[in-house]
Length: 372
Image 1 (cartoon, rainbow, N blue to C red):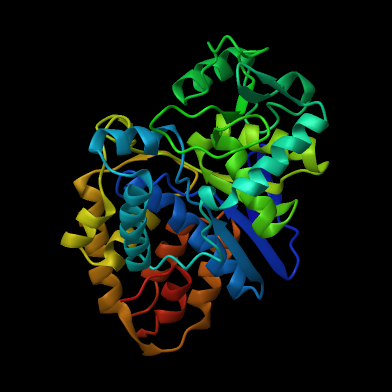
Image 2 (cartoon, rainbow, N blue to C red):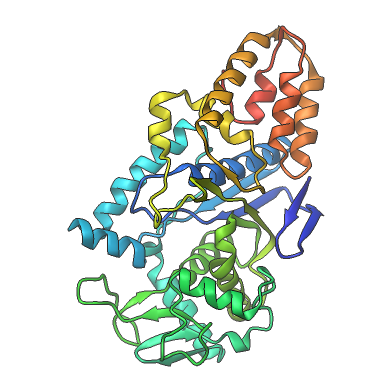
């Protein structure tokens, strides 16, 4: 199998053992799962299905960011406890993903479950001299990370813009460098707080995933990924802090999906231009919604329109008409070949669509997570 590795910026042949470990950044559960989430998790579901089909055992961890600026702000707006909000939205997310046929995660740990591990990592970063305390917070010093930028390949000016857009607060006067990022911060009066030897507070966003990946899968995972919007700052910061503390790279391969847009802009909670999975499932079958996602290559950006759903309905009807009970191993092999070529789902679907009428399509469609 070949996949595009973000760090290397090229298609690479995967070299994997019998057990493949994967870490996919999960949602911050303060609003329902939208189509951008579905596209990301369908991609890694497709990858798992093909790897299992090829004889590997897969262990995919998908975290839950149940404490960060966004969920705390939303809970404050609604006047509810942040963990109650997280529980409500996670139940909806899990229901939506199960309906879409996404395989259950090997583990789905919450950030709040890993406070001891987070504190341990921060202590090790301080002991290693790559972190410092300032203004009551703990920061990672990017000047001590020669690989900072090796995943995103961005220049400093671009990093500063993205850091500001994604809650990195480059204007924070307590930082030695505007790109330094927070590991531990004092909590506001109405925010959750945990005791630490540096004072009460809560973790920064990036350290949560480093701690959870280490606890659940070990120092190095085979494949780490998510949507392309996580490359910087989240994955860049994760990678350098894990390398600085553990002495080995966090991931062997970095895999990122494209972004889904609506009305000319990336679909995002901050903009409010969202198409919710639950709404789509109320008007179309799960197989139809999944086929709509599979019509787009995972690495490409695309914009959702009503035409996506209508096209998927026509495709579902065509496949149902073609399906029969005559065995044809060639169709399955064509689907495997397409997925092995950088998860080319559109090519895989096209291979099934051209099968002779009466062919048993269930093995090939099952590899795509589609049930007629």
